[in-house]
Length: 202
Image (cartoon, rainbow, N blue to C red; front, side):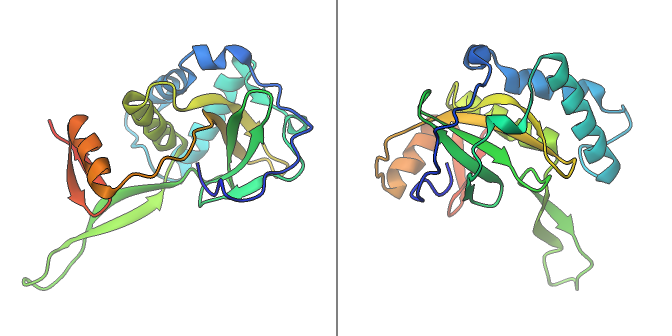
């Protein structure tokens, strides 16, 4: 949860989200829907595909009653990190996260560049992620920590762009050292590949 040390907004206007959302794996359901709706000859990235994914996700959410309205949100959410605005719902004691500016985080990858023979042609890059890639990350996190991320619905903003709304339980902060983090990932089948990056071992 980003920037949870910031002051919390007034939460007197409580969110009326779908109560059974915690019991249903809507992250996986939305991800499966987007995967099925992609044209067979398309990739996961690119402007036309991003627009298609947003439209398809809105259609899916509307069919399930998960198309949220502005009155469900506090007037002044907290800006958190690069991806979300967030607020705390005191009734459920959950943190709700709303993607911001029609962007769904970043997607890493390797780009090949034309370089002289003595240099490595591979360059690590970050691109704006698509809704599908965002949901893939949530699904992977839920596989590591079941129930961590709940998809609450989709929010169409005033400018017509789409935001994905998720929630997480509140956790007490427990300080751990780097060695403990490395050991936890190793126990889950990951190996350390950078200072703070891990890769699944197959």
